[in-house]
Amino acid sequence: MASKTNNNDFNADELVAPEWLNAEFLREVLIKHLKEPQLKVLDVVMSPASAKGDHYASVMFRSKVVYETQKGKFSKSLIIKTMPEQEGHKKEMLSNSHIFETEIGMYTKALPKFEEILRQSGDETKLCTPCLYYSLEPRQVMIFDDLVVEGYTVIRDRGATIEELKAAYTKLAKIHAVSFKILNENPEYLKEFKYSISSLPNFLTDPFVTSGNTNFLGLIESVPEFAKYKQFFKNIETTFVPQLVDILDEYRSNRQTDGYYILSHGDFHLRNTMFKHNSTGGLEDCMLLDFQMSNVCPPSVDILYSVYLLMGPDERRNHHKELINFYFNTFVETLEKIGFKAELPNYVDFWRQLHRHKMFDLFYMTLLPMGFAGERNDIDLADMMTNNEVRQKLFFIEKFIDEVKYLLPRFEKLRYFK
Image (cartoon, rainbow, N blue to C red; front, side):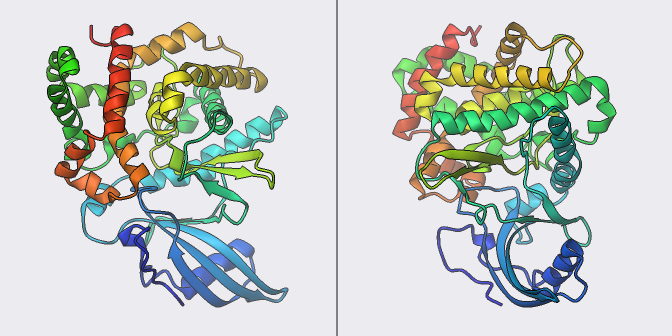
């Protein structure tokens, strides 16, 4: 059983599979899934499931399994997702969290139910790949079919096209719409999805979060044309994170009568989306991945996040309103199609809510340096998460400074600084 990879392109904690992740474990998984009690595993090859920087909140492996049943000899490629076992920042942040309960609930309860509701209206959209196996004890594990085998890929060497972005927004809008209907008709069904990213142990006090505004101030103070914005960012230093939490928890603690609420994806960025193209390059489908941070909250949490971590610079500057309106139109059209009976969301209130949650616009802007650093593939995500000196340097990436020169005046026109 091969279980080692010495490629610097992968996360360090995914180079060697843990001892328990072996042929016997996979045999039990396949017996349960395929209902073949006589199944025998003949060979297993383990490797990392994703490239360095694709994710942080789990450890993932790809397992190519050759097995035999009474029907013959077969092979299957599996994606195995589990909690970090190596000591360090990742384990400290995630070990006592609810992320696996949340994602298991999404894949086994929420998303299948959403697909059922869509199918009843004639919409055959596939919202997720099925979860073949999951457990919380003795270890937190989820296992899926490998989407790469089905022709899906992650975009790494370029930005997404407008067509690809619209495909991703279509999937998100349908998830949001069905959850919006359920929250209106039977909110108890989604009550378990109450853990936002702010509920991660030590997250709110982690320097990765608390240093964002401070590091941005360092950039503000070094570029003369940014000087007029300095006082605003100094004024929010102590209130920045609490305001973010207020938005994340608004549905549970301070629901607004004119607010819209949905079950969010929670981490809607480009590396959490896989695309399938045909032999001529035409787009066939996309699939959203990684629902560990899903919770009931305003749609602005996903939408504003996507402006910075799904779109590229050109889309952010020239197409962001077009793309957000595309999402909103799909959201409303889906509600109409699935028979939503109450008053439909309207364009004005939706954009008013996005504006009211401007603090997330500002926070997500401070995550952009990590995105630009990821393009260079020369900085480890773990270093960015744990080393503030590394993060400080990222704020002076030329691409980020150029982006800030565009964003701050736009925010000013939107009266964000009033």
